[in-house]
Length: 278
Length: 236
Image 1 (spheres, rainbow over the protein chains, first blue to last red):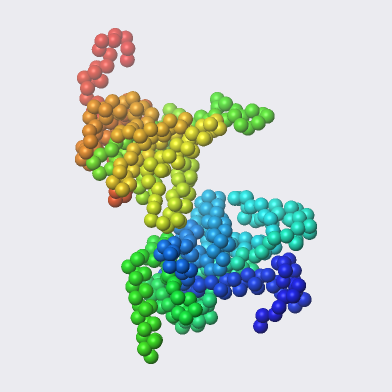
Image 2: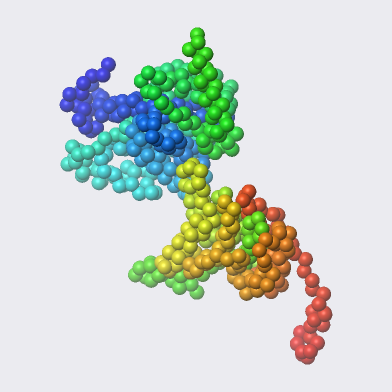
């Protein structure tokens, strides 16, 4: 399953003999160790949910946000190394506002996902990048600079982002859900899950009839899945963080309203008890 | 005409405004701020545009009224849009209030002035946050202050004397509107760039309301207008 790199895994600029880049695979492992993050596309919007594992009882509930708004119409949930995630979110916000100021309309979610993926991928190739605000096609400016430096500096510090991102937004083409992995690959999904419980979560998501579901119902389902997937034995405490962007929220990305969140948590706990009782 | 940039460096720039809005008048009343402006955009001495919105809500708590160059006003709205967007994205329960927005605008205006590239506006920023009313003004050279009633342009000379006499704390909404209408009427008579299409807006703790534009009634039945040459033989 996991083969030892032995020599081919020291740098992200090295392929192994069987054509793998081990550093990127190791980055994906960092994502796999984080709390589960789920996104689903319902018929009228997107719901994002995060199982926020609480490291210490001293932490204030509601702090260490894992879901961020990147523009009015879209949000991003981050799994993996939190500091890397912050960088990606900042870059995404910048791309979104830049597009808006140049083209006068909110950035289409597809375009935003492409830019995020492009950025994540770039950081698996080059170690020192000079980004300017207006540069969304970095390759042109970087080409000469990188050509000279990468040869001499390729043994210096560079690592891929240790985080995966689920990006959900609502634009003219309707609600859309994208997932970007540390390798820079991005696909569009009906339902996506990353983190510890992603296998179980994906199975649960596949059972849902998403095309018939409204976001209101979706919020309840996401809560149930996250509660279900949470491993009581290994990780004691977690906080559920959820957001949505749907017709009901006026196509704005926002935290799920408190009332609905409580309702979802209650329903999820009830569903768990039912399962335990069986 | 407009002073041109040096051939050597582009650092010296002053501007001339092209399409301008005239006065904005605002006052504090019991529940918040009332602001009035007409909807005219003058192209020099021509009253070219008659439906320009010069009062805009900013975020949840503020209202911005602008006189001066309209394109600079639109640029300021873009800056503020981004400011409010980033503020909203924090999603932390806090939001920028009128005092903060006014301060931001002052910094922008003053710094532009220092680079000899001013935004040719006089801005009125009013709002209510947590029960506190705030009304301030900032102009193109960065002069800023807050007061119970403010005006821009000719409003300073024609409207503020009226307000100094007749404004008091805890005006009701109706009293405030009447007072604003009185000021706008004087401006309509005496300001050559005024247009008879007035917009009034208010901002309270609940939010901003922009009322539909209306026209003021004017009276031209003064005896001096009927026989204007009486007392000045030979004039017309």
